[in-house]
Image (cartoon, rainbow, N blue to C red; front, side, top):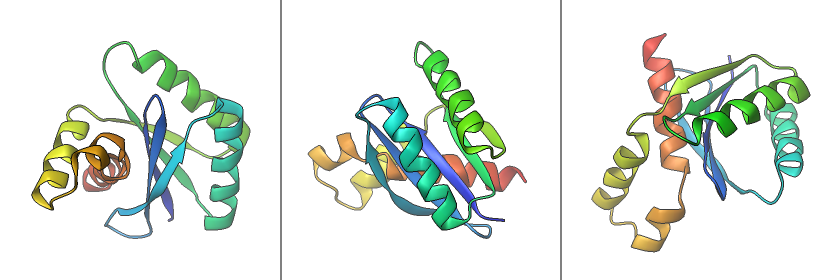
Length: 126
């Protein structure tokens, strides 16, 4: 089963893919409008033959917009979507980027590592 993992940020979203037991980085998309973002994700899902979407669900104020985005995405793409707790994934992703020597600017902008952690957490639970 091919799975797309998503880390939703206010300006960018990170993407990860899995066809087995390991999540792999796929890329990052800049958010201009939600409608355009959903169309880009729909195209990715078709091209990559995605069968399931795992969307990171944060705590706090951003949880509501993420849930709304997930519901909109699921209706538009018509694929199963699972919310995965993403508590502390951004902090863990930043720590891992520090370990490999990523510059500060890249650490602030890169959601791909967080998407991998979110997807890997889902895979590990299965």
